[in-house]
Length: 301
Image (cartoon, rainbow, N blue to C red):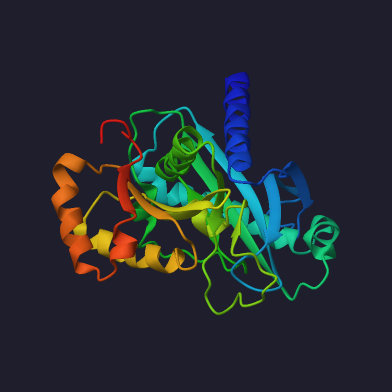
């Protein structure tokens, strides 16, 4: 049994490492031990499955430190245990973040960077499993829980099966259908990243995008460019209107086409709704170059 659990754990860590490389986190430290700050909680060290850091594209002169915890199983989620298990996972990771802020690891890595005014210390839990039939979305299950660890940190992000698969499907489409384009994430401007030195696009996926329901890319090939937005939620006419508004803002200054991709879009079932929405937008140059696709069944839709 112990050998089986060890093998399952190693498989999970390998799956997550491949995922992290795919989203641009190529130099993630793994299996680090951080001296425990709260000796009553953990006597010696806090073990973490991964650690990465990057310059925050949404805030000038800011670095994001991300401590990673992998909770991988061969079995499906147990719905009745989701809240209690998540609280346990979050408490462990929160304590690791608390210890990290006082650690040599922080001083030797992100703490040594120059011209940095602030740090975000965040956690990322990969709570995934090998069950192929499980479609339980953990985020709504945890949406209303009241849980405060009392430990200061800048947020813990959760990746479940649904979001893990969503991100991979985005890259599958990019690699198979747009493999002659170079792809970049689009970093929103928000009033806090006005520094001209801050990139507006990049190869590193911000942690905010990892469990987001919308992921924006720009694809580039020579002088040609495509803005493509992937949506986790199914096609709805109302949501299409909102996403088109976002797409228009993101494509400002980008001369090329725009693609919005849903998991269930069907030209047969939805084309008329798309045409109605396009007619409501008083921008023919934009709508003429706007396409809607399905990232699950690209060929049949």
